[in-house]
Length: 168
Image 1 (tube, rainbow, N blue to C red):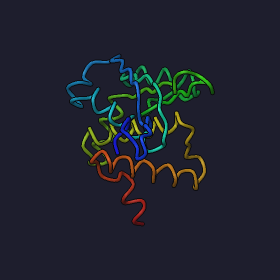
Image 2: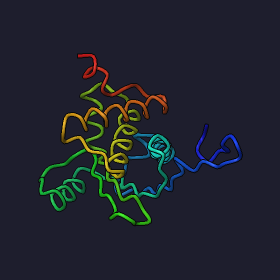
Image 3: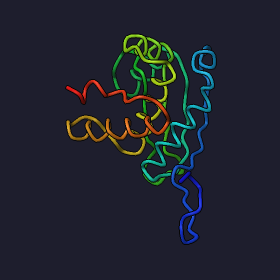
Image 4: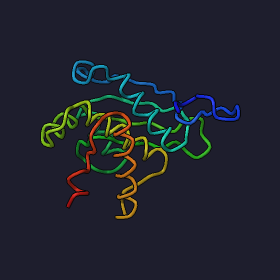
Protein backbone atom coordinates (compact mmCIF):
# COMPACT_ATOMS: atom_id res chain seq x y z
CA UNK A 1 0.00 0.00 0.00
CA UNK A 2 1.45 3.41 -0.87
CA UNK A 3 1.35 6.41 1.46
CA UNK A 4 -1.90 8.31 1.20
CA UNK A 5 -3.75 5.35 -0.28
CA UNK A 6 -7.17 4.04 0.62
CA UNK A 7 -7.41 1.37 3.28
CA UNK A 8 -9.79 -1.58 3.21
CA UNK A 9 -13.09 -0.40 4.65
CA UNK A 10 -12.74 3.12 3.24
CA UNK A 11 -10.12 4.54 5.64
CA UNK A 12 -7.25 6.69 4.49
CA UNK A 13 -3.56 6.23 5.32
CA UNK A 14 -1.33 9.27 5.59
CA UNK A 15 1.75 7.48 7.00
CA UNK A 16 4.81 8.44 5.02
CA UNK A 17 3.46 11.74 3.77
CA UNK A 18 6.33 14.19 3.99
CA UNK A 19 7.30 17.70 3.13
CA UNK A 20 11.02 17.94 2.52
CA UNK A 21 12.62 21.32 2.00
CA UNK A 22 16.06 20.90 0.41
CA UNK A 23 18.58 23.72 0.78
CA UNK A 24 21.71 23.64 -1.37
CA UNK A 25 24.43 25.38 0.65
CA UNK A 26 27.36 23.94 -1.31
CA UNK A 27 28.01 23.28 -4.99
CA UNK A 28 28.32 19.83 -6.47
CA UNK A 29 25.36 18.07 -4.88
CA UNK A 30 23.18 17.86 -8.01
CA UNK A 31 26.05 16.51 -10.10
CA UNK A 32 27.22 14.05 -7.42
CA UNK A 33 23.86 12.46 -6.57
CA UNK A 34 21.37 12.95 -9.39
CA UNK A 35 18.46 13.44 -8.82
CA UNK A 36 19.35 14.40 -5.24
CA UNK A 37 16.10 16.16 -4.31
CA UNK A 38 13.89 13.30 -5.49
CA UNK A 39 16.06 10.70 -3.75
CA UNK A 40 15.99 12.72 -0.51
CA UNK A 41 12.20 12.91 -0.63
CA UNK A 42 11.86 9.19 -1.37
CA UNK A 43 14.18 8.32 1.54
CA UNK A 44 12.27 10.55 3.98
CA UNK A 45 8.88 9.28 2.78
CA UNK A 46 9.99 5.65 3.06
CA UNK A 47 11.30 6.25 6.57
CA UNK A 48 8.12 7.98 7.70
CA UNK A 49 5.96 5.25 6.15
CA UNK A 50 8.00 2.55 7.87
CA UNK A 51 7.64 4.33 11.21
CA UNK A 52 3.96 5.21 10.57
CA UNK A 53 4.68 8.93 10.86
CA UNK A 54 4.17 12.05 8.78
CA UNK A 55 5.92 15.37 8.87
CA UNK A 56 8.06 18.15 7.51
CA UNK A 57 11.81 18.47 7.65
CA UNK A 58 14.51 20.66 6.20
CA UNK A 59 17.57 19.08 4.60
CA UNK A 60 20.72 21.20 4.34
CA UNK A 61 23.14 19.88 1.72
CA UNK A 62 26.45 21.45 2.59
CA UNK A 63 30.21 20.98 2.65
CA UNK A 64 32.82 19.88 5.18
CA UNK A 65 33.57 23.39 6.45
CA UNK A 66 29.93 24.20 7.25
CA UNK A 67 29.15 20.84 8.83
CA UNK A 68 32.32 21.14 10.91
CA UNK A 69 31.14 24.54 12.12
CA UNK A 70 27.69 23.13 12.96
CA UNK A 71 29.17 20.07 14.66
CA UNK A 72 31.44 22.28 16.76
CA UNK A 73 28.72 24.75 17.65
CA UNK A 74 26.01 22.26 18.55
CA UNK A 75 27.88 19.14 19.64
CA UNK A 76 31.26 20.53 20.73
CA UNK A 77 33.09 18.37 18.19
CA UNK A 78 35.56 20.24 16.00
CA UNK A 79 35.40 17.92 12.99
CA UNK A 80 33.34 17.30 9.89
CA UNK A 81 30.76 14.53 10.12
CA UNK A 82 28.45 12.83 7.63
CA UNK A 83 25.01 13.80 8.97
CA UNK A 84 23.70 15.96 11.79
CA UNK A 85 20.13 15.83 13.02
CA UNK A 86 18.41 18.61 14.91
CA UNK A 87 15.07 17.33 16.23
CA UNK A 88 12.39 19.95 16.74
CA UNK A 89 10.92 20.38 20.21
CA UNK A 90 8.03 18.06 20.98
CA UNK A 91 4.75 19.43 19.65
CA UNK A 92 6.38 21.41 16.82
CA UNK A 93 4.89 21.52 13.36
CA UNK A 94 8.15 20.15 11.94
CA UNK A 95 10.25 17.06 12.66
CA UNK A 96 13.45 19.11 12.60
CA UNK A 97 16.45 19.63 10.38
CA UNK A 98 19.14 17.46 8.84
CA UNK A 99 22.53 18.54 7.50
CA UNK A 100 24.73 16.39 5.24
CA UNK A 101 28.28 17.02 4.04
CA UNK A 102 29.15 16.15 0.46
CA UNK A 103 32.86 15.72 1.20
CA UNK A 104 32.31 13.25 4.04
CA UNK A 105 29.63 11.45 2.02
CA UNK A 106 32.06 11.00 -0.90
CA UNK A 107 34.96 9.83 1.29
CA UNK A 108 32.83 7.33 3.21
CA UNK A 109 31.19 5.92 0.08
CA UNK A 110 34.59 5.48 -1.55
CA UNK A 111 36.08 3.84 1.56
CA UNK A 112 33.11 1.47 1.88
CA UNK A 113 32.90 0.72 -1.86
CA UNK A 114 29.29 1.90 -1.98
CA UNK A 115 27.55 3.93 -4.67
CA UNK A 116 27.15 7.57 -3.65
CA UNK A 117 23.36 7.45 -4.07
CA UNK A 118 23.08 4.42 -1.76
CA UNK A 119 25.17 6.07 0.93
CA UNK A 120 23.24 9.33 0.57
CA UNK A 121 19.91 7.50 0.96
CA UNK A 122 21.29 5.67 4.01
CA UNK A 123 22.33 8.92 5.70
CA UNK A 124 18.97 10.56 5.00
CA UNK A 125 17.16 7.53 6.44
CA UNK A 126 19.54 7.49 9.43
CA UNK A 127 19.06 11.19 10.13
CA UNK A 128 15.29 10.97 9.74
CA UNK A 129 15.17 8.11 12.25
CA UNK A 130 17.08 10.34 14.68
CA UNK A 131 14.48 13.08 14.17
CA UNK A 132 11.83 10.51 15.11
CA UNK A 133 13.63 9.70 18.37
CA UNK A 134 15.77 6.70 17.45
CA UNK A 135 19.34 6.46 18.69
CA UNK A 136 22.28 4.08 18.62
CA UNK A 137 24.10 4.76 21.88
CA UNK A 138 23.23 1.40 23.46
CA UNK A 139 23.74 -1.92 21.66
CA UNK A 140 20.04 -2.81 21.65
CA UNK A 141 19.06 0.60 20.29
CA UNK A 142 21.78 0.38 17.64
CA UNK A 143 20.57 -3.02 16.44
CA UNK A 144 16.95 -1.83 16.21
CA UNK A 145 18.01 1.30 14.31
CA UNK A 146 20.25 -0.66 11.93
CA UNK A 147 17.45 -3.13 11.19
CA UNK A 148 15.04 -0.27 10.47
CA UNK A 149 17.62 1.31 8.15
CA UNK A 150 18.19 -1.97 6.30
CA UNK A 151 14.44 -2.57 5.93
CA UNK A 152 13.80 0.97 4.62
CA UNK A 153 16.77 0.92 2.25
CA UNK A 154 15.63 -2.46 0.89
CA UNK A 155 12.24 -0.90 0.07
CA UNK A 156 14.11 1.87 -1.75
CA UNK A 157 16.06 -0.72 -3.78
CA UNK A 158 19.40 -0.30 -1.98
CA UNK A 159 21.47 -3.02 -0.30
CA UNK A 160 21.73 -3.49 3.44
CA UNK A 161 24.58 -1.24 4.62
CA UNK A 162 25.05 -3.44 7.71
CA UNK A 163 25.12 -6.81 5.97
CA UNK A 164 28.75 -7.58 6.83
CA UNK A 165 28.19 -6.56 10.46
CA UNK A 166 25.14 -8.84 10.79
CA UNK A 167 26.87 -11.75 9.08
CA UNK A 168 29.69 -11.74 11.64
